[in-house]
Image (cartoon, rainbow, N blue to C red; front, top):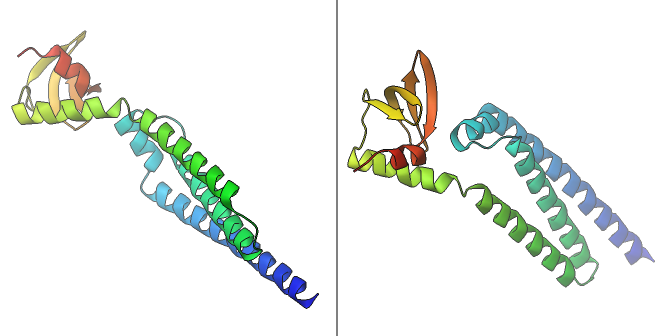
Length: 166
């Protein structure tokens, strides 16, 4: 009887600590992501809309909850094999989704490296890409900044590489 009460108190403490830890780390990530403007940076650099920081924050929170659940099951001598497999499947799925979201980024990075390495275009060059004519301001790894009619335009490096002959 006493051992059951002690286990119940232990499990309650694990649950409480898991919730507190998940919320603390989630709030810490939220403040950090806001400080570095993660959503805006990803939106500009990788053409990724939405609140990526929220997804990351909640993924970490879920990971902490699952870890807490595993600790509780382990402490109560309950088999965790099924739960471990569910966690693995969850994170493999998240990993695949992350890889799929980067499918447009890698060609732009490779084109940006080629543009810089082979100096196909340089700063202050006048270029015409499709219907846009302007002066190259900066060549980044993902996109090139062009000044066209007093307006700054960002063009993906992949598009520039395709348009430049030689």
